[in-house]
Length: 470
Image (cartoon, rainbow, N blue to C red; front, side):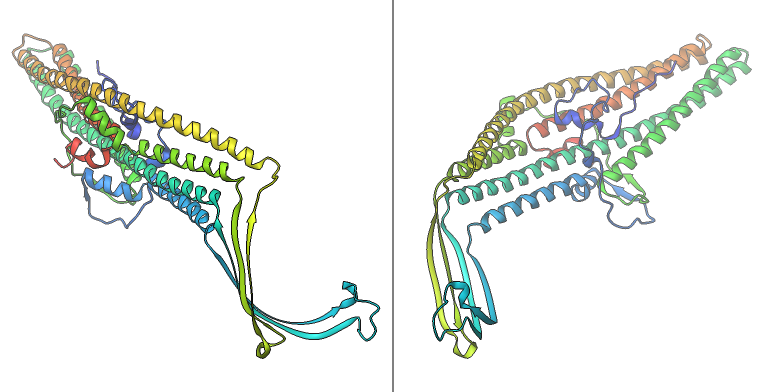
């Protein structure tokens, strides 16, 4: 019987890095809820006729430039910067210039000047020339200054959130690359199994010709060859599909052909102290730092809401020339200081304060949750690494034993002391052991990546952790 293996879907592996990787599961079981943007990129460049050699580091670097999630994060930073500039503009002087030349006729009767002898109702026409600069600026506006503080913290939060998005994109691109590498290994293993099946089929035919083996032994080996060939076809298709998913995520032109230059390998994880890792996570994780910036923004917004009932001091003035025409215009100016006191606004300030309080409580809770989650994530990732490391050793031992079992089954069959049934079972055992080894190595790499993600270091360390340049 052949073992049907579960196909790992391209980016589904990354949820293991975003929460906790369960090394015992197939590497694909967990990506369905990831944002779709991380799996899409903006194609850039022109496809060439040559085959591009793409390392894992190259793929990650290109993904950080062309992935849609990064572009969307940059856009959010731009929006936050625009909000900051609007808040700053409300505290800066506003200067307007105007030059006006007019011709007027006034009806003095409209202003109550009636019944005066010698004064006609209509005066004019006469010209008025007015050229001046007008300025208005707040001198003291506490609510406006608090709003500026809030918007500045909002920009910091979006920039830090963009760093978190980069971490996620690195995980997605890296797991897509690992998916393709694992599928390439499955293709190579399937091809080796096809070659082995052909050799054993020839051995069965020789044994039947010598009168040692029955016809059913040949049929079993023919079936095994077809099964191995089918497995090779499926593995090749899965490999090409995985490459397409990787190419889309990093923005390669659809027609560009490429090879995977890196061969990630199993490297035992370095020993790390859980408390030290948690301390690093609390300092370095971009989601925690972004939450801290959002909390600072919420506090400043609450301060702005509280200060909105306070008076504000403004300066208004203008300077220019006024006359009937340009040659007779004289210098004139106006300077005025005004205190604006909110008296009644229908409850708008109260509503704003209530909303700001609610936002502040939410941001405090989010930050506390993220700090606690960082410790849990580190502890979970360390457990996963230990489990994945043990599974790699088990899988490696099983693969060695399966190879030895196949060799002995072949020797017994050639010696005529065993049937092809034993040979078929040994071939299936090799296939299963190889699949388990590929999956366990992939899960081990992602367990290490999960620890790096929980510590806020995945962008700097993913390729090194995966052995991506080997």
